[in-house]
Length: 225
Ligand code: G3P
Ligand code: CA
Image 1 (tube, rainbow, N blue to C red):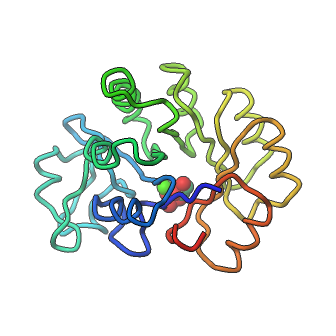
Image 2: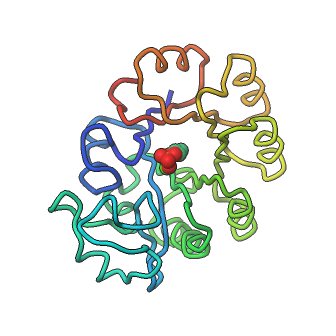
Image 3: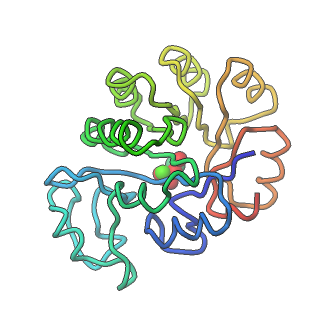
């Protein structure tokens, strides 16, 4: 069962920072999950919200700020907002990277970056899963490069997610964990999909979801899985 560290090991370090991703590696996570947006000058930026207001000492929308501007603001007074490339270089094939596309504007650059790491740096497509609640964006990623593994994020309608996953030949379905039961987990797996629920943090829930034999769990506490 894959232990996937949500936004890095978010329980222990500031989310979506290199520090949090390093912590996930130190905890032997099998994967990390992170969120991406595009900066005004075309860099893929790792941050959850569309603004930097909550996480940094700055203000503004990520897509209106350049990389040097974004780098000038700090998280917890010490950590820079990382680019996706910086995270790839830190992880360096040591675990799976689940990239959640928060804004479709970043998808062309994202496909190009994954393709660059596969063709020039000896990474495998299996090192990546691109997930999103925006299924149109997933369709576009798939159209640009059908080898990139896709994870279909589902918050409500699991049947619809399963139908879309079959249509797009996804690698995984990422359901909100309250949607799961042992039967629907088996059904998705029988159709060939990995089942990777989010974001399971409470001990009791972790035990219950593990008993469904999911393929992995996205959690703030990879060491608890
Ligand atoms: O991977 C799914 C999960 O990360 C979705 O929720 O808000 O943490 O991006 P959020
Ligand atoms: Ca996320």
